[in-house]
Image 1 (tube, rainbow, N blue to C red):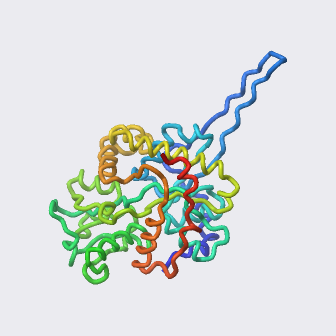
Image 2: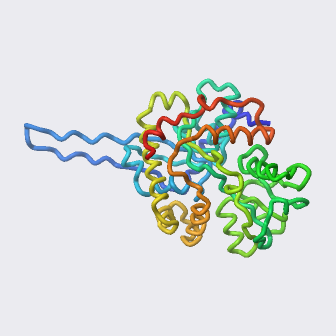
Length: 352
């Protein structure tokens, strides 16, 4: 049922070490050697080196634009952090990297922290900042449906996501909220790997598909699909992705966590105060294989659905809604306490 993350640590740590770094650049800084002062009366203090922080992200997606703005604009460097960005390619792998010490901070769905807590982790992972309060995927149909209603899915075949993963659970949550039984009213194909559903849909599989970007926009640009609904809009506020670290790391490095959150907040502020075109231009280097006009279209879609909040505070109501979704999906036997798994101390300090 729920993922046995701790139990699989030894098996997956080796996999983590072979993961390819994400296409985005890391925040690499070089501290210059201070000039020698010939005066015997005073000498210049050497500049302190930046703190090295390894961040493992669940995926590299335009959905996470504020973080990439913070990287590209040098906000982490301004806060004294030398950031190494690594892609985990899945919440289970990202969580394993954090628990094993391969990564200092993880960026993933916060359901992973609930699973590990309930499995009895001693040094469990605590969420300290929430980036996206909405789902980032879309329902794509084979034809334009300007008057689409969720009940239109009854009797249809939909290419869905992995059982127990946030994309699939949010999709089923929306179905249930619209009085649709995910098990009996439609057929959800969960046999296709994440990242391959758009290709399968373009080849004729399914009547609908649930897609992240750039999959949804690619299908539209190729004339093979049309976005008819946003799961982010229809699910409401859900703590879709958050930053987390082990209790021990937070306790031992509170200044580093605060600096990290400060840099993220600067990225959030930029997104709040600039146009999609400006945001897209800033994050373009993070996605070298995607045309700027496509990046702009995707950013605009997320921007218009209020994907990014003004702050990074992880609200209790969102955490409880997440657990409602997990329970409804049959992935949670026991609810976890918000006060154990979330701290808002750092996000509140920097919030306006």
